[in-house]
Amino acid sequence: MSLRVSNLRLPVEEPEALLPTHLARALGVAPTDLRRWRVLRKSLDVRDKRQLRFVYNFEVELPADELSVTSRAGDRPHPAAQVELFDDPPFAMPDPGSAPLAHRPVVIGSGPGGLVCAYFLALHGYKPLLLERGTPVSERIRDVKRFDEGGKFHPESNYLFGEGGAGTFSDGKLTCRGSGPDVLRVLELFAECKGQQPGKPSILYYHRPHLGSNRLPAVVKAIRQKIEGLGGEVRFHTKVDDLTFNETGLQGVATSSGFIPTPVAVLATGHSARDTYAVLERRGVPMNAKPFQFGVRVEHRQDVINEVQYGPRHTAYEDALGNADYSLVAHGKHDLFTFCMCAGGYIIPSVSEEGYFCTNGMSLSRRDSPYANSGLVVTVPVEAFEGTDVLAGVRLQAKYEKKAFELGRGVYAAPVQRARDFLAGRVSKDTLSSSYPRDKVAVDLREVLPPVVAAAVKHGLPQMDRRWQGRFLADAVLAGPEARGSSPVRVDRDPETRESPGVRGLYPVGEGAGYAGGIVSAAVDGLRTAKAIVARYAPLGKG
Image 1: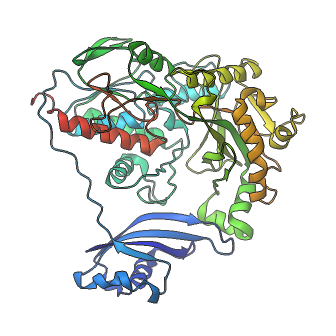
Image 2: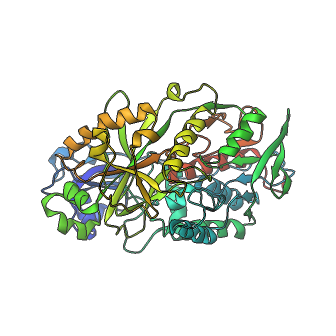
């Protein structure tokens, strides 16, 4: 039988080689009774600064006559550990459907949702065609580097567009609120594709696995090569300009390279493809405005974060755990919360269009920058969009991003302000140190924030400072705006078929469609859409 053992807490110094001993003690059995075990989850608890601990969840298989262990928890050396039956189903793909495909399915966008969907379609014989408006990741890296060094902006090869999507240059966090066999299968795919580094915490179970923006390109390229090796095709520099459909469903997609007939298209364009939203609206594809995240980036010295999180023994913990991260929430009329925290990271220009400016954060695999930054965002409600149509949130983003570009003198200088000066309503006068690679310009950041966001930042910053006993505001620098944390639009889809209710054969997927919030969740969304397509259609040539 299999059991789940949860909340087994051990000092971070405890060698993992002793895990079987601790697991057996928690169950009240001998280590020899552990037939098979694996770590389901490992997270770091920093609440007690005197002794930081890892918290483990396990799956373990015991002989059938040990079923009674679930009732003996209070008598064990680890009384906080919880024991229950474990019955998660294994990962499985559906049997192929019988509906014939006259043309191969098309996947639009090579972010995590599109890549993973295309991979599983290719794995099961559907020979998908993956279309990407931008460049291969190797070219994209060069274009981004040139831009960081002050070069010209490339409209189709930047921090948001190109192979791998926006996630390629957004730190490489593999966190996901969900769990289960689909999530594990996605993480296994990433691990197979150069995502697991020797000597690093396992991305299969660590609570906050992190690859780094220097590692993600290799993962992205490896998945693409798998797709091609399985009979799929990837076309770069191919932008989808329009959809063709009638009352029977999708007929094909019009692209910058010509028309492609297909009855099945997976729409995985990401949340920054604003021109695609305009096409969908013009064509009458059902969509709705949705709340989205808007705010600023807050940056500290990393050594401050380490002292706050790790406590008086921070130097020893830095050696064992690396640089610390954090998560904070300040409650109010509109909660202010941290998002996409980048320990040892950099603030970057998250720009997808000429004439607009937006920030994001990233870090490399070693997380060795002397700075730490985090999104500091508010969920903007639809009623604050300054409009009632489906694209009102997109226009709100664009309004403040355009203002930020203008304040940045038209050269992608980052608008910045000390956090204390933001609270005081004054422009910072001294030189502000920051990891941002291009120029900076001191402004009043209220000029680049919707009023609801500015009010929440003003209300929430003192709360966060109290949580850190005066350490949060001391040297904090704000940069903004941070407007691309989530999509302001949701493309409708049927919860069972995963198709658009207005266009048979169109499958909205991932962050851009409004159904995910990170690399793993978007990838899982792509996997589940691949399952839906497999369940309906026969593999290419077998219908």
